[in-house]
Image (cartoon, rainbow, N blue to C red; front, side):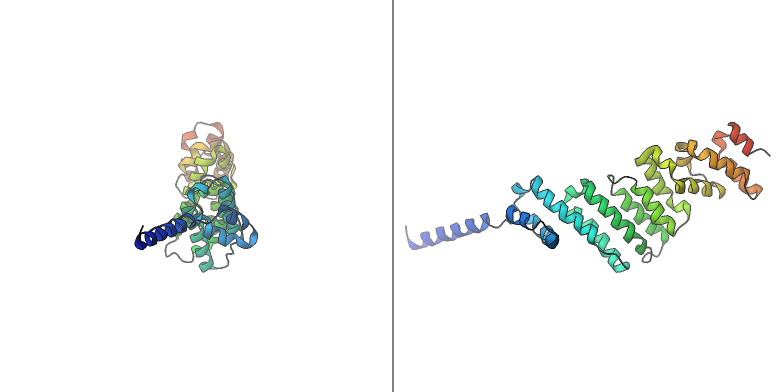
Length: 248
């Protein structure tokens, strides 16, 4: 065996060794599993060999990601934008987070804090409302998120009709439980008084809406508003309570 062959074998051996040790050891990632090293965990996690990314690995990453969401501060528009960018980047990097109830719950809390600031950056309020809706749609795990975003974000700044898509999502995901929402019921009444109909709510939540709607019709400040409320209740026109409320 000549010297060139020996040198080539040594180089190949060195490359093989480097390749085999290029991955970050799971044991070392586990050692970083504490409050002081969350950022490094998220930076190093994908350096662990794919074959080692087991339940333990996911646990370490999940804890770091949850803590990151919980500890993110939002005080103004720039910090709100950074926070929301991070909430999108983490599940892109670690897709299993999209199924993590713990992480999604903290993301929801962060969204409630950050999304109101984004209204300052949108030329059209409708674009901002759509951004809030998309945030809700991206999380099918956190209970009552659409309802919470309607109550704590959108309706703090906009009129009831703008929250209809969020209420419809709440009705789709939470079923009849969404019908008990005071803000949903108020929105249905306000929309009816304006001459439109919140069709989904009227169809799915009539049991909860019947009392407030008929009472509003009886107490309507103008005849025109009464007619609008009664028009919204037309599918139930033969019910005694509706007949009484809408009597001339």
